[in-house]
Image 1 (cartoon, rainbow, N blue to C red):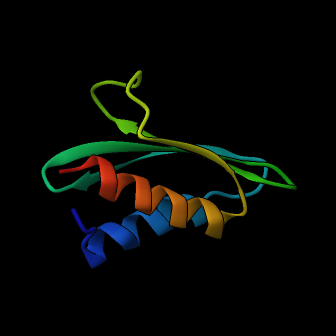
Image 2 (cartoon, rainbow, N blue to C red; image 1 turned 90 degrees about the horizontal axis):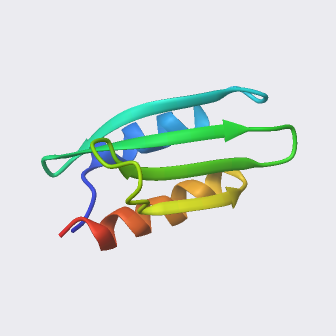
Length: 83
């Protein structure tokens, strides 16, 4: 199911809004499902893990790369997982 513009904005903010050398977890509501976006940034890469907030063991997306790459891949994974 396609992400709304609001979903895309929240995901982009969660990923790009984390400072280098920091970690954060942001809750994003997508089509009635609350997802957690865990982001960790180092000087060289961004690591993103997306999972349902009520079940951290059910990872929807996990990847490392630039913030832009992670955003694009995470958005595709969420769209494929949320039906």
